[in-house]
Length: 509
Image 1 (spheres, rainbow, N blue to C red):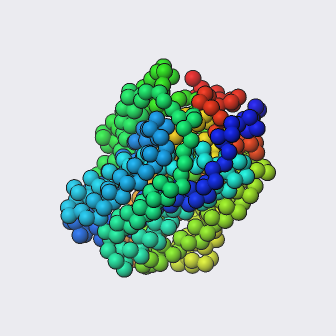
Image 2: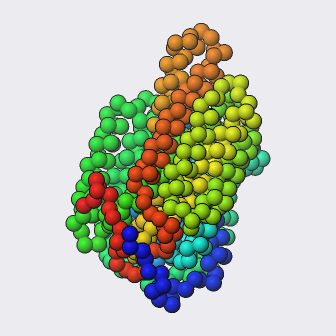
């Protein structure tokens, strides 16, 4: 397998002396985007009561964000390539802060939903810009591994941090501060970006924007996310005409998008980005793994609060061992071994360890102890996902040309966002159906004391499904990811295509 000739890189690609300071502020921005998904979940019941949002509409506080974020990520990634990664990064931060301020000051339901959609729009600009800045800032293999280790740990642990922060702010201050807190993150990150992030001009994409590709990708992804949202909505479900219609529309639009991208001169998503077997394997395996992770956060939050009667703060604290596991797996295992072993020997075993942790959690019962079941499950799940996240983040831009770094970075964010949306809908449906079935067979209607057991049974059935998904992720890695220790090499030095890489046969164009 040909390798990028790092020795031939021009002098302008010498390491940026401010790169570690830049990493700190890129990481702060990434943390803000990731934790926002869960910090609002904890605050939602209080926001619903304060703004008189109906039960039918409360899901839109979450969905408005995920629709905008997931649907516009590819567009945001290409904008950062065209417009400049630093400029896109700072604009995304300022916009995200303004949208957060608007949401925190919301006086009615419409104002909050609009603010959440705006957060998603600016998040879709910010997230790929952050990862692509990281990809082109760290050009030395060992440092690149360390940088992606830190970034991967934050990306993996941010959701759990959001649970803790959301619990503290909601319980001791006010639900509005779950949104206002983003302003502080954004100001610090934007100030640091102005001072310490120095983007190189070489390799910038100067092509015209692919408008048909933007429209097809955005509408196709929005239809997909909306379809899964309706599938998990009471009163709609998987067989509802609106759900089926959204899935059909998404399939048609995304198929048209692939066709258009294979024909236009300057595509929004060059198919070479996803047909590379290593990058394609990462996008697919991580997207699947996130399906299980998102569902787990959802179920265990309900389990701890409704079954075990934990407070919002204690619920967040309970997830701390998972955060610790992710940080150790990403920075101490992934980053240290990335230069010594092929990426698949970190990602594959990482997913397997995470699956074992998830397997332990299938033993949950109403009377399970935290130390006996939840703690070991959390530790192994965090350790495995942290180990897998680090090389996955690095491989997202493996041997990519700098001109495509933004859209390649957007793809890994897209896979996680779409995976999260699918996971929430799919696993929620499994859990609800299992709970209902168990309740009917055990007479919960006449024995209300069994309701908690019915709930836990539903959670466990969904967690079993998540175990299977993580195993499939490990198999995908073993099958498709073939990159060696050079996987932490920087993007190829030039504006052309990546150097000498095989494509995934089944999706090659």
